[in-house]
Image (tube, rainbow, N blue to C red; front, top):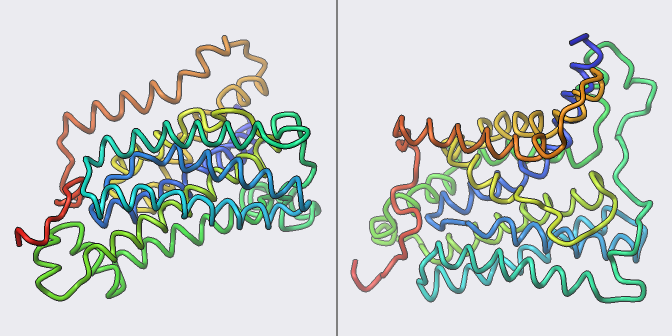
Amino acid sequence: MNDWVLIQSLVVAVSTGTPVVLAGSGAILTQRSGVLDLGVEGTMLIGAVTGFWVTTATGSPFAGLVVAVLAAAVFSMIQGVLAVSLRANQVVVGVALVIFGSGLSSFIGSQGDPPLARRFSGAIFTPVFPESVHDWPAVGPLLLSHDPVVYMSWAFVAVVQWYVFRTRTGMHLRAVGHDPASADAAGLRVSGMRYLHVALGGAAAGAGGGYLTLRLFSDWFDDMTAGMGWIAVILVILASWRSLRLLVAAYAFGAISSLGFTLQLLGWNIPTELLAILPFLVVYLVMVFVSAAERRSQMPAALAEPYFRESR
C-alpha cells in the first residue's frame, strides 16, 4: 500500500468514525453515572432525522446540528424517567428506546411535501481550512482537511476525559456510578446527576446522528445508523469507559468500515456483502477476547442497577 492510499484511508476512517466518537463519548458520561445506555442507536436516529429536516428548511447545517443535539437530549429524557425515576430494567428500557427511536424517526421522515426521504440537502459541513493546506505532506490531509464537527469531536473527547478524571464534579459522577448509596449519604443528588448525564449522553448521540445526515450522506433514509449506536456501546466497554481509548477504537472501526474504499483504491474486487459484515465481525471477535480476559476493572460498579434511596 503506497503512502497516498494509506493517508486517504486514514482520512476516510476519521470521518466514518466521528459519529461513533461522539455517541460513544456521550455514552461514557451516561454509563459513568450508573445508567446503562443501550438506546444510543435510537437516539442517533432522532438526531439524524431532526438535524436533516432543519437543515433542508434553513440551509444551515449548524442549525441542523444544534436541533439534532437538543432533540436527542429531550428524547433521552424518556430513558431518564424510566430508568432513574421509575427504576425500570435498564436493558429493557434501552432496547425499547431503540425501537421507539427507529419508529419515530421513520414517522418524522415520512412527513412533509416532499417527505425527507425524497429531499437532498446541498448544505453540508465543509472543511475548516482552505484546500491549499490539504496537500501538505501527511499533516495536511490527516489534520487540516476535516470539517468543524471532527475538530469538535476531538475537543469533546478531551473534555470528557478531563471532566471525568480531573474535576470535582467528575469525581462525584464516578462516585454515583460506583456506589450511589454512599454518594447519597455524602450529600450528592444521585437522581439529579444521573438525569444530567443521561441528557448529555443523548445530546452527544444526537450530534453523532446529525453528522451522518449533514456530512457523511447528505440525505436521510430509514435506519441509516445501521448499527453504529450499538457499536458505540460496545466500544465504550472495550475502551474501559475512557474517552481517549474510545477515540482510537472508533477510528479503528472507521478504518475497517472504510476498507471497501481502500481496496477500491488498490484495485481489489471484494464482495460488498463481506465488507458490510466485516466491522461487526471484528468487533464481535474482540468482544469475545475481552470477555475471556475479564477486563472489568473500569466498569462502574453500580452500572444498570436502579437506586432505591429508601433501602440506603
